[in-house]
Image 1: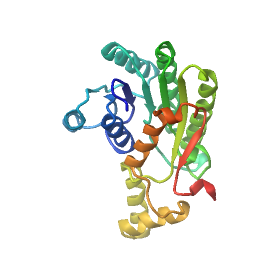
Image 2: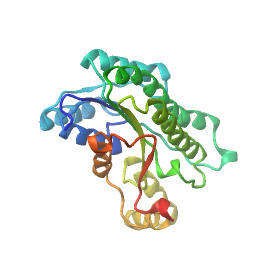
Image 3: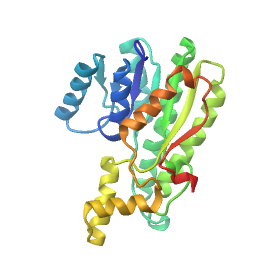
Length: 260
């Protein structure tokens, strides 16, 4: 389905981003991976996807907290592959604290990576996508782009901003062959969520299983985690012809969280 297309997935060395990259690769897209981690592990991930999927895969370690680096990632991709068709803005970080105790440096870092990076990437990618009259921009927001939780001021603000940015870009590109949508996952068992589960387990002297069940019970009616592979499928759908007229919208993949 995506043979001959080129996709950037930011924050794709683990978790949701890796799940999305693998699915796009399975459908034939050449890939640019991005994210932090051990160089050897990243190379293993890169070469495994390349050999298993039969696509070209490169890694770019651009720092998503720096606007010029983000724009450089897009420019380098177009230079390497001659095109850019799919941009998945997935990179994100988290920190929790009450508003009055929230460290300003953490606020700035979360907005830089979770929101500003997407702005810079979209701004850099659009001229190429418009020129070829085809492009898919998918912003991985969160249930927290639609509703709030305590102690997550920066994350909720950034993800709400990302949904707003998605709407604007959807309007500005309408009719151009480019679409822009947000995917809003609920609880996904990523390294980020794994840490929250461990924190709850330690604080409340519970097992990992009990702590995981508590997290789900609080918010997610399905009582099941969303999987990175399922989110990969959602992104793939948004890249399909069936989604040509879906733009400027937010799709919840949250086990019923925001239906409550």
